[in-house]
Image (cartoon, rainbow, N blue to C red; front, side):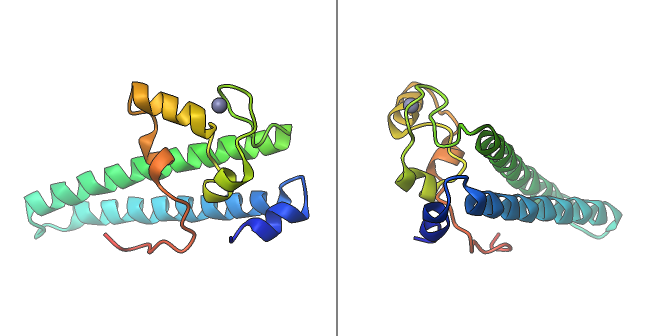
Length: 140
Ligand SMILES: [Zn+2]
């Protein structure tokens, strides 16, 4: 696994912290790029209206997803600093290294997550999207 080396090497999660901060910087950069693209769109008079509206809608959707991830990363970093990282927000049990390796910013243990998902569609984007460092940036 990609994170194993870093996670095993120190208990202060310094390696993981670095990875999370890198990921956050990447997301923030993506948000900025998208923002300037949106500004450019407004200046193009010959852009088909429907196309343009669709594009804007899509960028809102992805911006929402990225913002959620940034929030989750911030929360994870705060927990690392407080020394509570890896503990389920709901029941206080350890989340488990395997799960953290797959989703370093996850907030709940598997049991609580399943419980939430049964009740409502709770942060399903965060729960189901796997951690993918090399995810293509311009796939859509
Ligand atoms: Zn739990």
